[in-house]
Amino acid sequence: MPKTTAERVRIGRSSLRLIRGDITELDVDAFVYYARHDLTLGSGFGTAISQRGGPAIQKELSQLGPLETGQAVATGAGKLKAGCIIHAVGPRFNEADTAGKLRRTVLAALTVAEEKGVKRIALPPMGAGFYAVPLDLCARVMVETFQEYLQGRTGIEEVVLCVMDQREFAPFAARLALQEA
Image 1 (cartoon, rainbow, N blue to C red):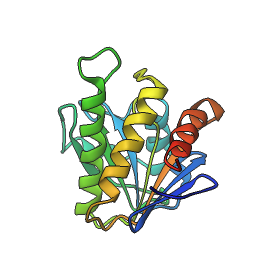
Image 2: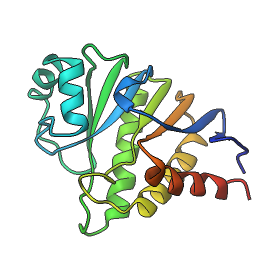
Image 3: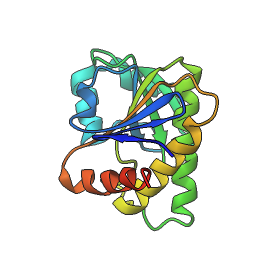
């Protein structure tokens, strides 16, 4: 089983790290945005991406959509520190098979990252904000998916789970602590 050091676990040759912060300010190769089907940058992080990254991101997105649940695409990151943004369309709460759809969405984001040669990728608690995917379900599915994926052949060296506050931090920290047993 992986070893935990603070909020970091080692999985295969990669690491999974849990941090608090603003995902749009991270210096990573890519970060994931939980996108709408029509790929229009909405409120919240969508607004932050538009304002901080500039209009080129939405312009690029308008050439790529719409997407189905479980699909992901990459765009440039404009003026942001990240090398690119992976826009992943995931489930909304109360959909049938929320866990399965969330797993496919996370895997799609990781696949796009591999195609782009990403070494460091950051993801938020996928769907746990506006789309009301329960945090405990989100933490379980995401951590299990990362553990399975990172044990395989991957060029991804670090996955950063970036949460906003203690409410989001607690279920992921608890799930990562389970990996130590």
